[in-house]
Image (cartoon, rainbow, N blue to C red; front, top):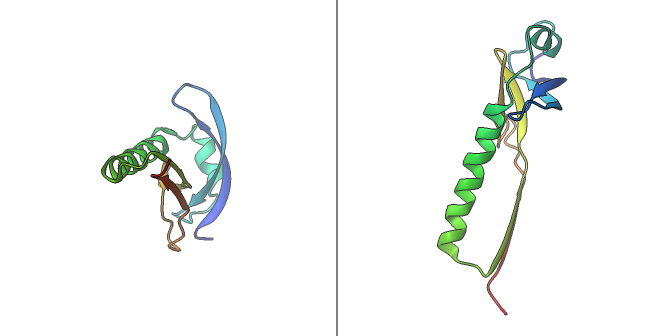
Length: 105
């Protein structure tokens, strides 16, 4: 079934292991079970996506120059052809961002 979620054990950049719910974009038979059987997916691509998003928010905040700011965002994880990828916006157009800015005293 296309776009089916699977739970995978992924290797974090520090060598630790993470349990991640991943969306299978290929929709192939076996889904995540086959991917895990062929080795642990690399979580580095997901972290690269998070880093790019954080840098984009940092640049925007530097332009707005608030006294205080907080940013929360959600990232979905997807598997495509055995590669784990972070998706800020998934195929359904869903995204989660919460930004709080303060300029006053």
